[in-house]
Length: 119
Image (cartoon, rainbow, N blue to C red; front, side, top):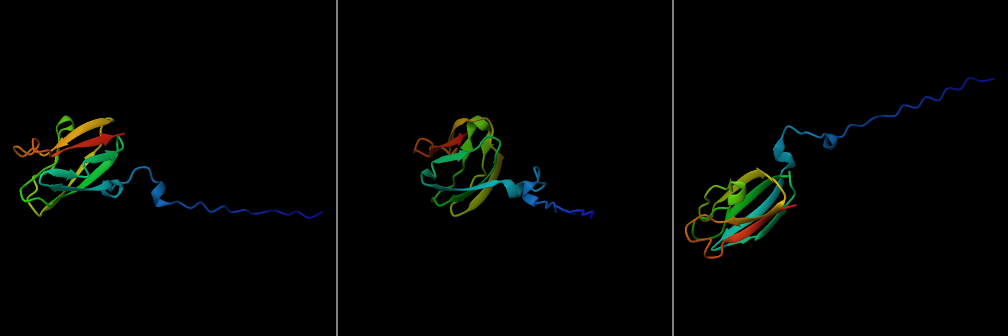
């Protein structure tokens, strides 16, 4: 008789992406570019998932200052001057469709209205 021992060493590989919680929230943020113009949002409709970390990169291509504002969620980007850009981060809340507007006087009336859809 022969005592044959099979030695199987299974190497467990740990991948960094498998980590549930990462200390740098910037890495997991979903980046969406929004262009502001006179007087519109592009894209007019932004879709995100509930609980998702969202980073908006907002560029103003208009000739006057604009901002991005969701009244129902108390979200307000900085006021962005013509030719400037700003980043604005938030965590998407409860699912629903929310109106986004530019809060500069008269701009909403001129059609600077969009929607934030949280799924």
